[in-house]
Length: 78
Image 1 (tube, rainbow, N blue to C red):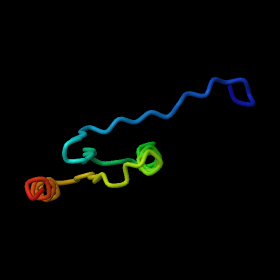
Image 2 (image 1 turned 90 degrees about the vertical axis):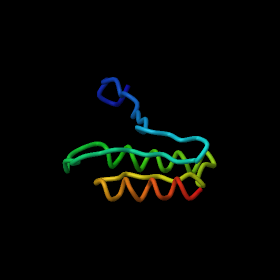
Image 3 (image 1 turned 30 degrees about the vertical axis):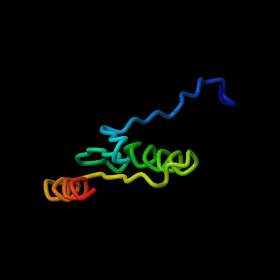
Image 4 (image 1 turned 45 degrees about the horizontal axis):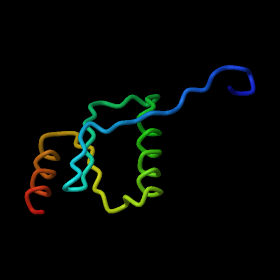
């Protein structure tokens, strides 16, 4: 409960894809509105990874086919 007596819900986030063997997280997003909560959730997720000792993981948010192709090249080169 907050100071006004309203219940405060936790912020939750689950990436679209997690490749544990490759240590890669992939989040697919289209257009993100200015008032969307995703940027805050993403920052909190990155902070969680740092505090959990997972700073060696790669994070991707591809916006177009070219960026997806780059991720595929990255994964195939490992």
